[in-house]
Length: 110
Image (cartoon, rainbow, N blue to C red; front, side):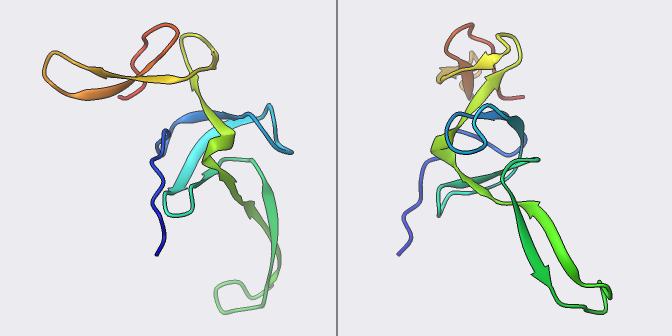
């Protein structure tokens, strides 16, 4: 049975890698996998895949694409603070729960 990890990031968030070989680079989240606790970040952790020639890709060859990064190794960037921040949960007046920057209080959910 696969344990599901609670994710602090969502698809479309701008994040910065805080650990590993890609430390200090930032990008947009393209996809998440809560089952494995990983995220795929735009232009981060490129891997090479060798593909056979098919009808779709008659050339075949080596394809470079983004690989997964552990979700614990990325942190959300606040647009107002322009830095990586922790998040807080806020309840709005209408009862909706949103994620907010812990430093400045800027709401991260659109």
